[in-house]
Image (cartoon, rainbow, N blue to C red):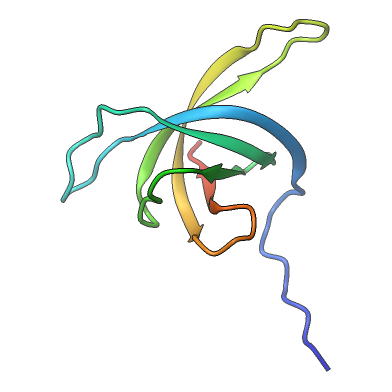
Length: 106
């Protein structure tokens, strides 16, 4: 019999598909990046976001500034909100491509 994994999330995920970009903020070893990396937001919650990326995944613990598009009702043009987030997990073997889980830093 297969054991169910205990849910670690604080809040539920909501499907939210849109394009995004992020830039690594650097750490004690690496300087900040100057290149925006493109990706696709797959879902979002109060505490974080899951994204799919085409390029190389970053290491867990890396802080990034992700731009989250927010649509005002009936508007076709999004307002882009920059948010600091920490990479919590990376999975490079997902069927849909490389994915990363980011936790918003508040």
